[in-house]
Length: 234
Image 1 (cartoon, rainbow, N blue to C red):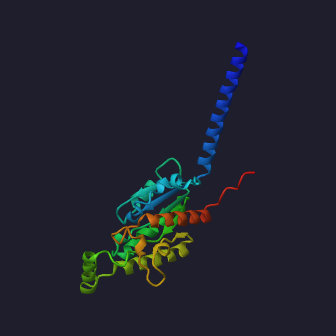
Image 2: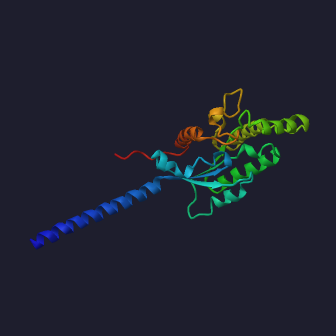
Image 3: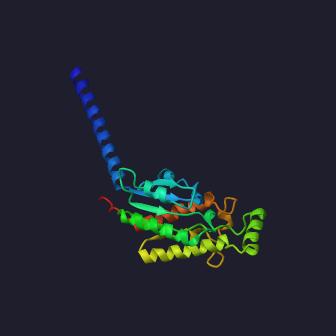
């Protein structure tokens, strides 16, 4: 009787250990197979919560690390993306419409340098277009914009964002760098390229939950087309 109980207990312990080893191995393999994606973001997608992407979608083939910088100059976080022990597989750089209008030529020079730097480090760089502003941002902001544009002759935020997006697309062609094009996902149409009203969080700049759900699907499709997928096991 005693010998039988010891033998049974031993088998159970062995089974538990075997399952533990299998889980540890499987987890390690999943971590090894998942791609490390660094998303350098602007405040436009501040509530996107990309670092929780796997938990809310159940898709674990990408591990997102979000680096936030509330300034157009993303030099600091571009360097931070490579400060860890492992090099990221993909680095995506996006800007916010809040920084426009601004010194467009200086913006272009900075952005180009980041993309070239990321690629020089042996990582896939990705250009992301800017989410355009909504048609109206409230009577007070609209009034200020009218004075800036019509009275002071300053460039329009909307028009400069579109010009920057066109340049980003041409930069992608020039450098053979893929472009994650957010603009057509959230804009009204090809003619009126303002943000769709149903995606506006309420301030004319930031996106809401409905927009984030669309961006989840769009980003997943983009990455699946960009990153070679592992073959299914038989």
